[in-house]
Length: 306
Length: 309
Image 1 (cartoon, helix red, strand yellow):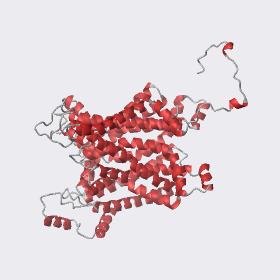
Image 2: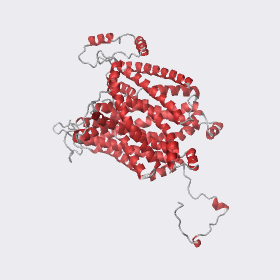
Image 3: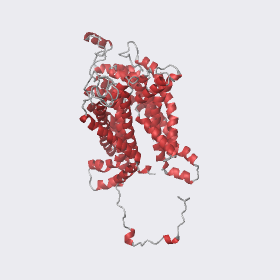
Image 4: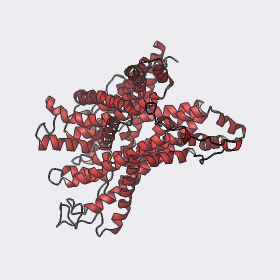
């Protein structure tokens, strides 16, 4: 186990390093410079800004400087937000995105799995059709349309909830629901398919043959085994949801991380994009690592230290 | 069913004459895997409904812009934001452009991006996954590690990079999807090929002298097609959604060329005053995605023998 964890750690570090390197050079191949978009700056001033941030040095030198800072956990200064480090921007916006993400997952995960199980158990019955319809509609409506409609109906027409912003608990309801609906739909679909797949397995027949009740079979045999595909998708899902979703944040004017991600790439804010990508990469690698350990707990057949 | 009992008199039965010839007779034509799948798909009403809606929307997208008296970029500033009427079936937008034509021209763009943005990356994925799984060893290791790293970089960055390099038209979007979307298919094809290549039929054709290439593309890949076709179908709504999302953040299709995502995005800004400008593209996006999802689900049920009822 210890050997396995160490091996994974080394692979993770290499992955993050490669990720940072690839992103670093990809970003620099983009045409233009970060200060071009601010039209007030003359070419001369742009050049001075470039040299102020060390962007006029040879690319390899910049790369090594960046890597050295990265090793110390320093993402550098944002090129667009004057005098703010990428670390401080992440520190102030990540908790907002993470809170929204966790709230949505807390809603979507139990409901999604329950609908998936219910629908698979009652395959071909009315409950199954209702669950399938909810799930298909959930994945078929893009989040920006869903968000806009929720906002229009509950905030503008019915005036039940605040339109936007991120202040009180009431402010969190609409964005949470908008995000949770699509997550829930995806989870329901995967869980249903996975449950049906498991139903055909021999160990279910064995369980039935030795006289276990349907409830026992479902809960301690089917669900447990059907969780494996869910776990696989949960790693990337949790990582991307916690990192913030641009669309929901934009519609509901939430000060989260998602908007910085998109804006920094289009605005050529190199350090910001780099910082967020590496941060996301670390997050994703950690999430996948936790998932791999959970595999072993759910299914004893999967031994980690092969 | 055991709990249903029907009483039949004994004289309702008579012996069937069986000879050694008739007992071996094949009374029904044997069905190939694909013929059987098609039969089961045709019986699935929901999937067929999806297919019909896709067909109608495609037909409208082809026909309407050809026969309309307006073009998608023709402005009429004296008649802006008109409500739906007989002259302009879906009304006009803030530049006085006819939305009926714009919506169906946008359908061409969105459908093209959706379909090709799903098929092309899948084909690339099949080729790379097939090679990776068949050759195994070092080749496999390198390809899989490459995919691991490339997949770790958020898709958005590639798509934005590519659109910044080669522009923002529909073709650029399809290329961007092709470059970013093949990894998932490659992984699953590789996994299946790894399992399949140990089976006897592969050994048999290798003994008969089949080359590696023909083994991969004539014997192994066709056996993975069922799952790939399903993921291709379900990839279409994903690509349409991706296009809508990119247009929403201003990186997709640029005006005056319309796409559903871009029409919906414009619609959102005027939603409270002219709701129909959002409702129409939103309904079409959702309906198309729904149809492809329903059809894809039906296809999966038809192709996966394990899910037979």
